Image (cartoon, helix red, strand yellow):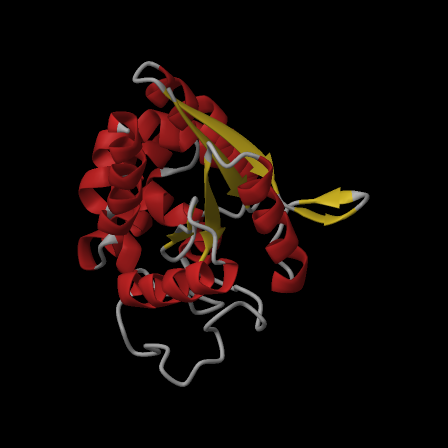
Length: 217
């Protein structure tokens, strides 16, 4: 049996773990526990400051040395104090994978715990939904589905950029104003399924491969 504590950025990611990843991997002997980021004593969710996140990661790593700790943070809109964010060596013009991999390495170096392996979503959770944009048909009109499909035909999901106006979630909202992240997001990924998302989202797939490698330990 292998245990993983997964620090999730928001309720959507937490639900994604509980409804899709948790039952999928439990059958293989890998047990994931999603934990929602705490931003204050009264509020949970959102990576608004790395200074508030670091103690939570470190505490999780130290409280159970027999478990691994990972994260599910969006590359889009990471706070300015996040490790590597202001580093001149950060690949500003690189691919989403290159940007995420650089920041993951910086985060691992900053935390310095052997049982910690960071994961940053490229560029955000909604990128996964572009693996099969036709799944939006149950929730919006044909015009919106066609617009999302056209984006998918010219961009791999993880290549949709992190501009404040054209990030994956912003593109969805532009054609589907009624999109609700915490409601539609988990339902859509469950309909799409892990196989399709892994096929079209290699950075996401690499993270799951790391999870699966722990089953053999």
